[in-house]
Length: 306
Length: 328
Image (cartoon, rainbow over all chains, first blue to last red; front, side):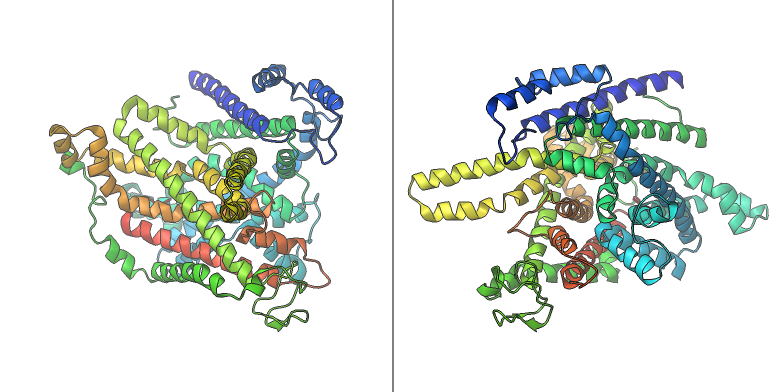
């Protein structure tokens, strides 16, 4: 286990380094710098600003300066929000996105597993068909359509949940469902297919022969095996939920990391963009590692190698 | 060993028959064909005065504009443009970006998957590990950064052509080029999306190649002195065509969704070009609780949801018909 973790940590660092390099270089070769506004500052002031932020010279010099500060765990200053450190901005905005993403993750994985199992157990009945049609529907409808629709039905018409705002759990439910909807569908389809395969296997016939009811057999024996493909999907799922929240944040007007990305690209705020990308990548790498470890705990036949 | 290892799904000649019995997939196919024909033909038939901006903004559907006395079937938007025209030209852009972007991803993914699967061993390991890494990178972010980086260069490049045309005294060509420039973002989006969306295709093709390359006809072809490229092109590619078609159909809605996300955030398609995502963004911007301009949101939302649903139905139908073993 330990050599595996070490090797994975090393390869993760390399991955993050590559992602950061590509992001920085792309952001710096993009036309238009962080200080080019409608009202162009005088050349000597612009030069002074670029020097202060270490953005003058060739792209290579800027890049090495940036990596140098990263190695010292310094994410730099935002060029747009003057006198704000990137780390301060991220600390302010990221928690909202994490809360939303975590809730959506819980909803997507649990609801998906339950719906998929139900569909598999009741194969070719109306339950199965409507669950699978619902899955296709929620994959096909983008969140900026389903979001306003959910608000109209559950907030305005039924009045069960608040229309907007952010902070309480009830205000988080609609955005989280909106974010989770397509992924409930992906998980449910994975779970259904995998459980259908498992239900045909010998050990389940034995379980039934021992006198377990179908529900007992599924809950006690089959789900444990059938859930494995779902577990492998959890890594990409986390990636999707973290980035997908951009749209949901803009629909529900939540001040989170999504807006940081869009604004920092439009403002050419290189260091803020880089900082946000680093946080995302670190999280994803950690999560994928976590999934791999969980996987071995669930399935003893799998040996970790890297 | 090869024959015994061959799974049944390789040679399923009845795939098209399976598809023909799938009524939902067929309805989806006819719907998409019909929509594509309408989106290509109808905008050219509409009268010119509907296509341009006018003073008649926010005319509700099925009403005559007071200012121009023109009849607007689906109403008008903030600039007084006819929604039917905007919707259908948006369908052109969205479906076009989806199709061409998916074709680019098909090219990259097929080539990558074929090389990885056929080479095997260490090359395969490295190539697939790369795919796994790329899969865990936030894709939308990369598309955003790529679009921002490419956009200005493409605009400048097109401008260069326009100036060259002007210098040679071809005003017609220069005019056409400056019209094309307004749509440069479409080109940038297609390329960026295609460059990023090929991972699933590569994985599926590689999986299929791993099975195919163990079969006797491949061994025979190799024994007869066929080069690796020849084997890939002559023997593997034809056998991969159905799986490629299936995942092409499933990649199109994914690309359309990405495009609409970016356009909704204001980073994608920009005026005068329209796509479903940019139409919904425009609709969402003018919505307020006092007077609902519902036609600006409802029509693009319905058409977009119906098209994506149809594409997914068709893709699932194809997958059931040709690739029954793979679930997701």
